[in-house]
Length: 574
Image (cartoon, rainbow, N blue to C red; front, side):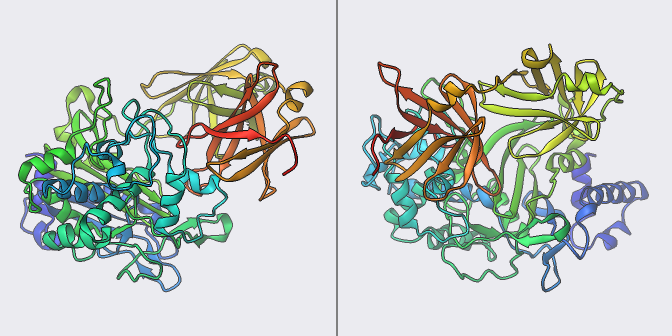
C-alpha cells in the first residue's frame, strides 16, 4: 500500500484515536512521516515568531494539517489550521476561473481583443486577446515594476483606476503578443477589470457568487478595499535581524493577480472541484484551466489558466506559488494521485520545502528514473591559500540573462554575491573548482584564468551552464559620454546620469537617491537593485542610443518585467 493511501485512513479527524486501531507497522509509518514534517518546520514552531500552516489534501479531504508559529505577535495568537492568509499569485487561478465562467456563459470569448472591454488600452501593432493575458503572452509591462519605476511606494494606496491608467499609458509592449512568455501581473489586473465590466460586479462579488458560495469556501474573500476585515487573519512579517520582526502589510488592494485571503480548509474545497466540477461547464471547464497556452510558433508556455504545468519525481504537477509583502503561499497538485500539498506562511524569510513534503507523501509513486534524491549533501571542502583565492575576486557578467555577480573574500573564505546582496560561501573542491555551501541543490562554480581574464562557469543542478565574463574598469571617456538628464513620457519621470569619482551613477531627479552603475557592454549600463520591490528588488539595464554622429540621444530602460521604456535626452533645462 502506498504511503499517501495509508495516510487517508491514518489521519482524518483525531490522529491519536485512529492510530490506536491501526496495525503497529502502519501507526509507526504515520508517526514517522508526521514527525519528519515537523522537523522541516521546527525552526518556526515557537511562540515568538511568525510561521506557516501545512496541509496535505487527498480527494478533496485534508489528511494532514498543522500550524507552526504565530499569526499575531502583538496579541500572542498562534497559527492554526483556521488561520487566513493572503495567498499572493495563487489568486490568479481564481481570477482565471472567473473569466472562464463568463466564457461558459457566452458573455465573452478568449480570443476577443482586450480593447473590446477596455477601449482605453492603446492600439498596438498587434491586438492583445484575453487568451494572451491568461497565459502571460501579451507583452504588457508589469505593474509590479511600473509602480516603483514611476516613483510610487508600495506602502501607499492606489486605486484600480490609477493602476489601470498607468498600464494603459504605456506606448509600447515588452514584445509582440503571442511571440514570447513573460509573467505579467498587469495582465491579471486587466482580466479583473474585464470580469467587472462584463458581469457588472466587482471581482470580489463575482467570485463570491460563482466560486466561493457554490463550493462552501466560507473563509475566502478578495480584499479589495482598505480597512476590510478578514476574520482569523494572520498578519504578515519580515525579519529585522537582531530586532526581530516588523509588520510587512500593505494598504493597496491588488485583486486579480493577488489579493485573495483563504485558509487551507477552503483551498481543499477548491482542490476537490478539479476532480468533480460543481461550478458549471463540466470537465471541459477544468480542462481549459489545466491546458497550457501556446506561443505563435506552437511551443508550449507551460502556463495554463493561473496554473504552472510541470513534473516532480516524474509525476505531472499543477502548481503556483505566491509572494505578496510578507506573505508566502505554495500549492502543488499531483492530479494522478489526487494529492495536493499546501503551505501558507506569514513571514517573508520562511524557507518552504514543499518538494520535500511531496517526497515524504508520494515517494512510492515517483518514476524510478526521476526519483528525487532528497537533501543534497555537499562535498568536503579543501583549504586553499589566500593568494589563490584572491585570483578569483572580481565582478562577472552573464549577458544572456543580464546577471551581475561579485566574488569576494570574507573571513578567509570565497563568497558569491547576488544582485540582492545575498552571499553564499564557496567551498573548494580543487584549484579553480568550487561548490556553494549549505544549499539543497548542487551548484558548482568553476573559474578559468585569473585577474581581468578570469571567466566563471556556474552550473545549477542539471541545468545548462551559465558563463560569466569579467567586467573591465570604466574609463573616464566612457563615463562622461553618458552624462545628462533623460525624460520618459511613459513613466512621466526624469532620470539623471552622472559621474561620481570613478563610478557612473543614476538618480531619479525627484528622489535624489543615487544608484551606482556598471558598464557591461558598449553603451549598456547595469544598475543593481534599481527597482525597489521589497520582496524582489530588480537589476535594471540602461541601453543608450546614438545618432549618426555618435552623440547619445536617449536610452531605453529594461528590467525583468518591463522592457524598452524610452527616455529622450534633454538638451536644454526644462
